[in-house]
Image (cartoon, rainbow, N blue to C red):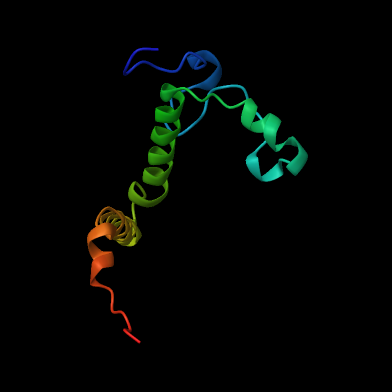
Length: 107
């Protein structure tokens, strides 16, 4: 699969219009229904390639867009979510500089 192509599992005659938020691969047991004893086998069936990871991130992005950004009466939730995510990200990347400003008790 080259960059910008449809997934190999996508068949327009079977699936209809392409939805970037949908996984077109073989269906598996949802994570919430996996028993603890089957967890290792479930993780073993996952595709762990960089393309699969990029596809999973892309599907998550599109699902978030469909839920919070694209509705006609979308509220301010996506703006708050992006604000909190960016605040957390910048706190984490600056943590090594911020930890030197702690107040210590010297006794």
